[in-house]
Length: 381
Image (cartoon, rainbow, N blue to C red; front, side, top):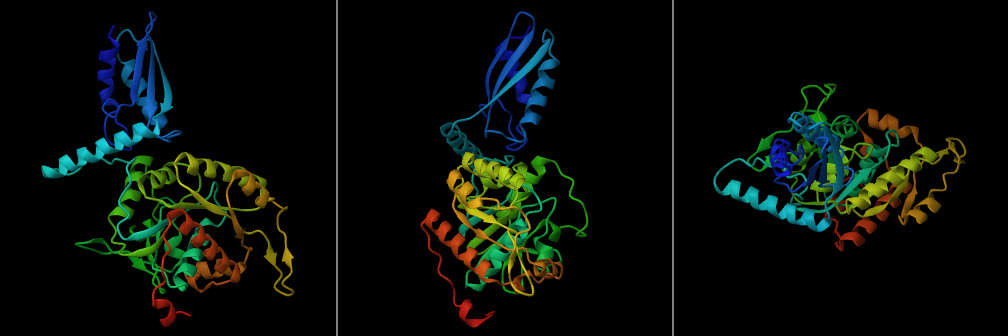
């Protein structure tokens, strides 16, 4: 029967699908023991707690060790690295990439856990939701449009790779071009810079059927390989849930704060807690919660009509230690304008107030106060 050291060497065949290196060199293999009956117990430390790619690693470890003679069964036990271990690993990966570049080799490391440089972007805001159908992309577009009206340079990275909608609701089409400085994002009629997967496909209805590691790499490229120029704010429209794409954004992008979108339903609030907990585990501050479709205004008398039961979101936010930013009504105009690609024409007092609060919260988190440009006085008033 092979020794524990020999079995560890066998695990060099297991590649972390996000980082692109074997789990032994990454220091993820903590211990291997084999009892007298041939039962192997393997301890693996993940680079992030609750990593959605953990099953892939576990299956690979089990498959490789099960092929060895004398091994009757394999049990894999997962834990996670400490913050100090992650910092040390990130520094090692940066050194390895620098060495590759110095000898003229193309970097073979995806290094999903290290932060990309923000370049000329002052503040990065992730807009997320625990479930679909809450209007997260609409909130992203509305906040971006209002920030632009206030005179800020704004960009949107549509990180919903498999279900992108940002390009459609802004009326953008056609593939972006590239120059020596990178991919040039599409620009909306008011000057918001946008990159979205739908802009890169041959046809917008082409399905994106990719596994997690590919999606992770694409999100990093959409941020890093695009020439965003100087931005006051970048809004990142995340897909719903807490899977590969949100994890990649929180690990790879220097996110300053997350805005969580919910609706007044018990199920939605349950999943909001998961989103908040994910952000906290990834050390991303939560700027606040927005409740969408809280009510509908009667078109005849302007009376507020409650479409759902009262959610108690203010109390929930307080218990979770997260600021409640405000409520948005259900408005049929949003759907009509989004279908026509004219979401920038939608402006309400509620959106204006929410943009002010989000801006103030992120300013507090970063200590940076962005200054509007002269564009505000010259156009689109």
